[in-house]
Amino acid sequence: MKKLLMILLSGMLVFSMIGCADKSKDTSSKESSSGNFPNKPIEVIVAYKAGGGTDRGARVLAPIAEEKLGQPFVIINKPGADGELGFTELAQAKPDGYTIGFINLPTFVSLPLQRNTKYTKDDVVPIINHVYDPGVLVVKADSQWKTLEDFITYAKENPEKITVSNNGTGASNHIGAAHLAYEAGIKLTHVPFGGSSDMLAALRGGHVDATVAKVSEVANLVKSGELRILASYTKERLEDFPEVPTLKEKGYDILFGSARAIVAPKGTPDKIVKILHDKLKEAIESDEHMKAAKNADLPIKYMSSQELKEFMDEQEAYLKDITTKLDL
Image (cartoon, rainbow, N blue to C red; front, side, top):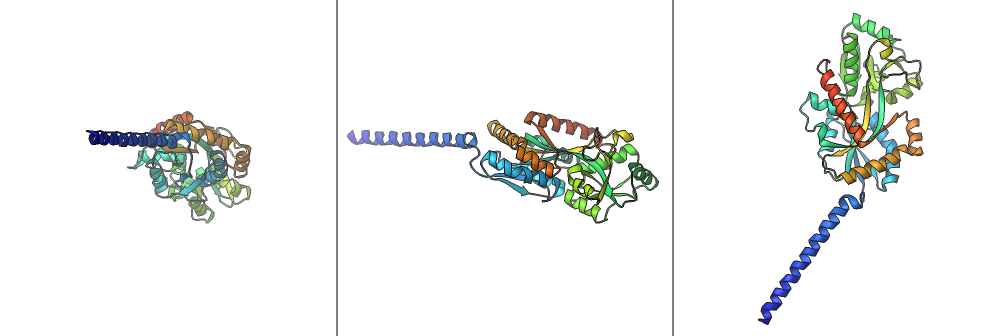
């Protein structure tokens, strides 16, 4: 009887220890998921090559984000398939806050509308917007086209003769160029590249005649006299280039640009999303970052998580309407 009692007591003690261990494990897991987040480096996927507009913006933000988060903010370039490879890896990453990334709008929402991608707009959770970069139509400074009117007239008289580089089939700059062609009643030859750096290299090397780019990507090249902006896709003239007309004032009611936003995989806990938003907002609004962004010609535009979600929905609605009309 005494031996049986000892066995029962030993069993109860073992089960009690297991229960405490499991409880401790659960508590530790919960704490690691949000309470002490972040406690290791955060990987930040950029779906384009180093040197492009998105990459430059990410690297301007990274050192300040590291200060605010207290952990390394590691930029990882994953180019390919017009951004689809990087976007897919981001959407399929573990939703623990340690893999986040930049998305480009409208490209991120346009690709699933045109091809069978392995991600959708709803596979990510919006965190914060960083940049909104207005679109511009650009040629080399020695181009035969000095004005938008020159460009449009030539295109009408020479259908498909003008070659225009872009950052990928169905990507943002392709949509911008195709929308202008549609509104102006002209036919252009669109030449896709793997990102804005290659797209601009083609223009600078004389391999294409023009490009639609974001203003931050070409500002220094315009200021140096290498490139010329024929028109901007903005409501009002650009502050740094007041001599450049808008497409709207020339009779083409097109507004176009690229938002560069930070998102996390779907399923990332709300508490972690809020921590990331709050710390990144501090970083973006810091004097150090705003000065660095100005030096890099980056047009900063903050959007909260909710504002970014609404913007993504608006972009999807716009694209569903316009892409059926465009030569993409």
